[in-house]
Image (cartoon, rainbow, N blue to C red; front, side):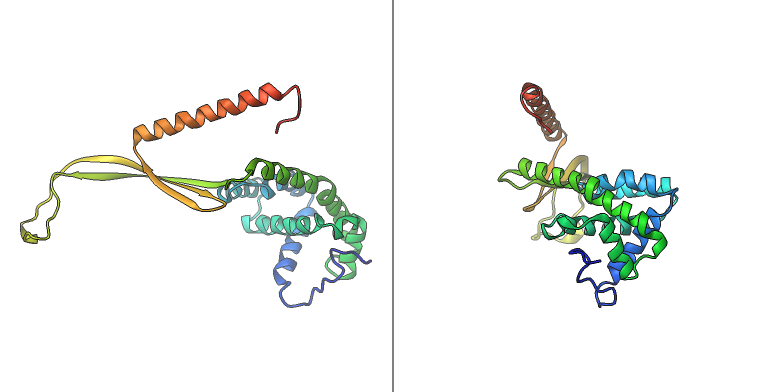
Length: 235
């Protein structure tokens, strides 16, 4: 059965080993009735996780609920992502789930007993997950506008010494005896964006001011959404 997605795919071609490994794990989970429901419910959120930390936390939780290894689930999600990224292209939009499953059988990636289940999986990816991914990508594109978008943040709090004096190179090092008067807590903040990373430090008062501004921004957003909710859809 000819399909755009798998038409030129050669399982024996060098470089396809990772896909074959990921695909076998995806098939294993999908055809396991005890694991498929939880996996099916969480895949959209995993595909659309905004940061690696969020994805890792979701993977750990899912692995625990499925009694499965994180690596196996991560590989299966990577394969689902690979398939969706190709199904989203114009050429592959005409590929039907049943034809895709038959093409996989012809290439001996699945056996005859799995065709129906994999046809269902392809239909789920194409007709359920793909629209969610497309909608979220359009939303993020609209929200990003002309400026870089935030992709992550990390914070580290340190104690820094307040010294009464400091070393002077003109003096004998053997006579230098520093005295610590106090320890001051300082937060180092890193904000990662699609354009660059920005690192700065802030004290307790600075952080309080920042939190107040961010909380006020949340209130502004909620107020704006409420204002236009009767006129058009706001996500």
